[in-house]
Image 1 (tube, rainbow, N blue to C red):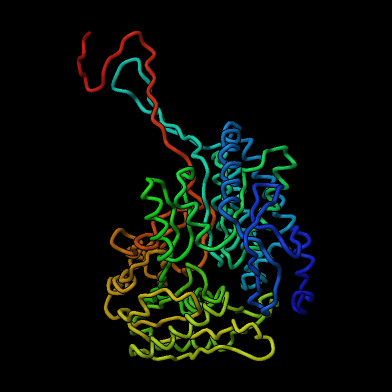
Image 2: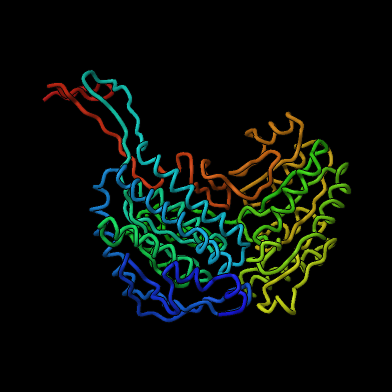
Length: 517
């Protein structure tokens, strides 16, 4: 264990979460079994080996699916409020283990400790939301055109939900899906990112303990580990009616095609190319706070990270100077040290993508006004620390159209009215998060109108990054169209059924059709 890990209590955190030096990476509950190859989890914080995990084989996967499909038949018979009680206990367990799980998230993924704690808090929040929802899985009633008939709609449990999550939110996105799926009567099979497998094992250990304490069967929460080949087993499996996948647009298109080919359902949360529009009526201080956190939070590795700052020409130089000045105050280093603002990228492959983006924006005619670069020396031994960079660019640059998962912010200038800024914002293939900074009510309402932002999330006077549990989260266009978390997102985890009851002694047909025998 490295000095950083020792100083910040990582060993104690792993122990509290039930993680040993070598772990089986497949689980249907309390039993762990795996016969696959071993993958090693290295921390981007200091490059140290944290632990090793066994990957799932095809044979392991079949054991998981056999258990899950059998358990579903029992779990769906439990009343929804009882399922909600299990989720409540799971949320309480997360409260007890918030600190160690937050530390593991920070150390294995590289985000700041405060962000790690915030991610666990998101898990707790979605559990609270789901508990209340377990008593509100409402259908609809409607009047029939036939006398003596009653019509209504209801929702039934769907089955096995497959979850594929990304490294940047290694625990929260799984919980968004799982908490809702559980109260809907579904069971879950989860493949976490192979870059953050220990976070997956930690969550599975917590869930398994809750299930065991309630004498529930294995299979309600299942874990598989490995690369994309393990994910392909789920996307092609007809026993999984819904696959929820979070990741890149490239990955999402592959998942969508595979699931659609068997007429399954997919919930996709893919890339973002998020922009903040800054109008002449913007509050400069609020703009700087929203833009800087949006661009450098989680080292730019959020799907909602701010990639583009679209500034009116009358405000351009003022905003530019303020943002550049703010970047000079950023502290880059160990994310477990709460004095630092920016931690590492996930791995050296991400660093290579970051370097490529900076080279390309210059080649296309852009100008770096805050030069980036890879940090080395004491404290940066992992090779994953980079400087947040800012470039002046144009929206039609190929690299600006692309999502680079790193702290690279593009400044774009617009003239005229807010419609021109909205056109620039909408002029990308992604459609996740968007924001406008303005004190002009007309501009704000225009931005939120049907002819305004084309994103799934549109904010006024807050940044693009982050979301509250109560609202549905997701985006449009090549972001995938999925919705997770709050509002009525629960409906995707259930199957919808329309019922008609005839309580007469006659059988009238709809639309007045006569069929006499």
